[in-house]
Image (cartoon, rainbow, N blue to C red):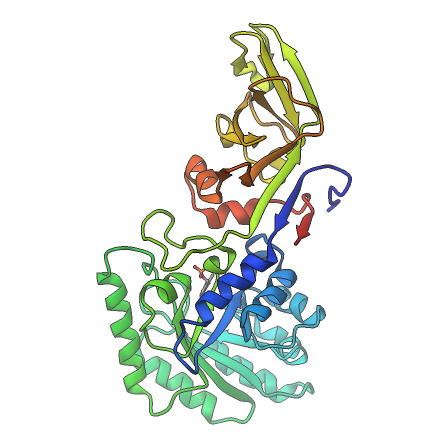
Length: 372
Ligand SMILES: *Cc1c(COP(=O)(O)O)cnc(C)c1O
């Protein structure tokens, strides 16, 4: 994809904020615990490699990604820390997992059997590092009973071809006030632990929400995602335990400014008509950048003042109503801080009736990312 280096619209990522968010978590973790930074989906849109490097400076000692290619990206960028792939990788790629020294999630006995069979037939040097996933109620992937986990552990321990490196689960409601389902999942995981005679190097259950609001939970590693980017995992629901520092801003510039008389239409479908003499500015960002059409009516900041997005958002541009004449080239802040005012990803998410995770991931690669 062509990146808009020659257009004044960009994501600005504050790597210091990422580092501080990681450090604030690392320093409250119990001794002997490790923080793995979750940098899947291009670091939740922030850039995986740059986020990973900032996280290391903050004290992260490993990484989690969703898919094999994301792990390869980190390795090719020179990241040597442990990397765990959280979703299922096809057994046909085991040689790739070995080549890049990656740890992989095991969610079924069949996968493990096929993996061992394959490991017996390939030349690449092992062993393969595995983390056994327990489904305690997320209903996504993993073994669902202590008995099936035990069988997988026994199979893993019966061969030199694999190393049983981790055991983990994932909570579906750790970001909620009501802890009853969370406790049910915790009990199920405890039942798995009790059924085993020994434990692997890493036992991990905590995403950001669990780490923040249930810090005394079991495990010796946490999978720290959204909070590292400075976003509250619960949205509005639970108060931050310590201040999280948002790392992402989105800025552009006015590329065109004009005064219109009353009664003039703006944008496709003519959904907005000026009601008086109005100053209308155009900014070079649109739904192809992930600035979605549903943001019509939302506001952006110009010189610290809120300006409404008027008319439909186009693919590459959108229009805003200015309080007065403002020069072409003036900075427009779509997400971030400007002259004492703030627009947060949470505010964008509220307008879109979704979560900030999704907003950050939706920003397209057409926008360059600048790191500071
Ligand atoms: C994405 C993911 C995480 C990180 O979750 P956050 O809410 O961003 O902290 C942790 N564990 C698993 C299994 C995940 O898929």
